[in-house]
Length: 397
Image 1: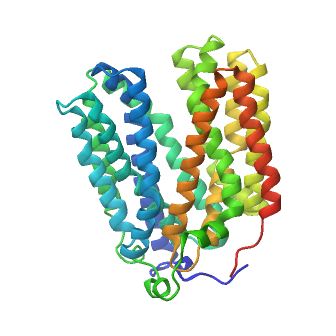
Image 2 (image 1 turned 120 degrees about the horizontal axis):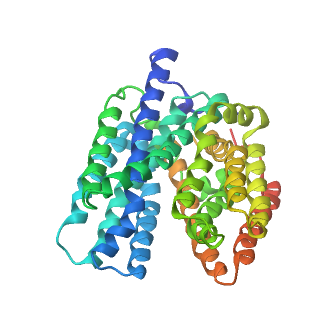
């Protein structure tokens, strides 16, 4: 075990204060995820209702991905300099205030810029939340806390789309007002975070030892090599899974159910998955996740039964529940002193880039057939698995 970093020390106040702060973060993150899940599935309908064509819908979503990616490192840098709490609250408040801009009577093409700005504000939340979770938890327990953080994310996938669809049934524009209220509610929850323990960690160490992006990339490379194919898989499934299920005869209800069933075991078994990751080792848990995604991706195009596809997706969610939280924990363990926010921001930027690549490449391959699309995902995962064995090493103390 390497020497503990300055920003890995628990905040003052003891274990009880740490637990209360952590649960406040989880509650705020869950509400944030509900707000995102509430709004995003309705956005394509809103753009087309305003006169946009399918190409514009794609550009709007691409602008969102770019905005989120651009925010990662600067937000991590600010979280290291200003503290976690101001970035979390500022991100949510600006995110809430930008919701009404969507419904202004402007040309529909301007929604591209609105979506970029909205995602830029929202993207600042993730590295600060990841860094705070690491600050609040001793290194040996980080698999557990990042599993809980991911489970709170999955709450948004379970509840958000259903609630958003219910509100949109009255009027599409109501979704944006409700989304703003949910974001403000999340900010109100996170305002309960104590100022002590969520401020700038070890600023002195940062000033003495500048941390550059190339060094961060070298430190986190073993985790990034495994996290990138998982993000690639998410992008791929976002792009083609709905198309594939409907081609097999699934209804839109079943398509939505398939995403919810994937998220369900992650929410229910977060503690169990975290225990497995802590015992198995973070990189080993990541390798198991990449192997599972790769093998099942190769299997999916040869299955015609919709219930079986949904069932295997449920199993996949359970088998891979530990992977991404374990890799987040490994990244936090490799962070240089005082650079937890920048480390998480750099890592999330890499994941965003991989997710975009997975969506674009897999979408193109799907035009050739499902075997090419899902087979491509399998190849990426298995190549990354082999590559991880070559780059794995212990972090420098």
